[in-house]
Image (cartoon, rainbow, N blue to C red; front, top):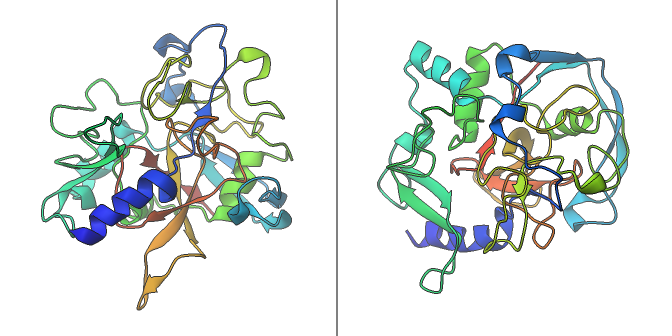
Length: 304
């Protein structure tokens, strides 16, 4: 128990520093009517492969040095894997996710859920018994009517299992960043400014994190996929909405024997703001425990 509670305190400060796109003054909040139906979007997009800029020298130290890397040709999901698609996988296979099993250190199923802190409980990450992909914020929450939102409360093993079922795999960090940058070498996926002309370009936190979210982008939590403009490769939500698992091992973390404890997650989520983290950039990276689930981490798959 002590290990997990210590883990949560660290999450609040660093490990889950949750990259979330912060937003300025939007002319009009994005609404459900502005979101594309995933059925109308290309399910996968084929990329030719090539060189990409990786990392940054002017932000967090773990992103340096900026360098050139080469990615192979591959196809990638145009959107994050949705609740609807994950439900199809579970129905076809009977798969039980890690969050639906007893969690080490807690002895009950559940996952991490963001909660606005208070004086009584200053941590914004809490373990919630019963939180899982069907009820991401815990008992009483639901994905009913949220088919098009990205699935969350999934571990690395859960994401891998879905990918195998779909005949695909998870991207490594080079492949992910190549896809996100789409040939550009700018601070943000869409250009040099976070909110050009006051327009929010991704689902993130507006206001002072973690206390005040003005929800100027239209979404307090996860947005359905396809609500914000795609990048130049036609990929949606490569910044903000939810973090995404990669197959790259976090290089700065210890391992227990031959068991890797942390993998790199990319892209940020709905939780980070300009005053905190700023990891909604393509160069940004974060570590996350491969076994532990939260309500702001999902994934997308690629094919060779």
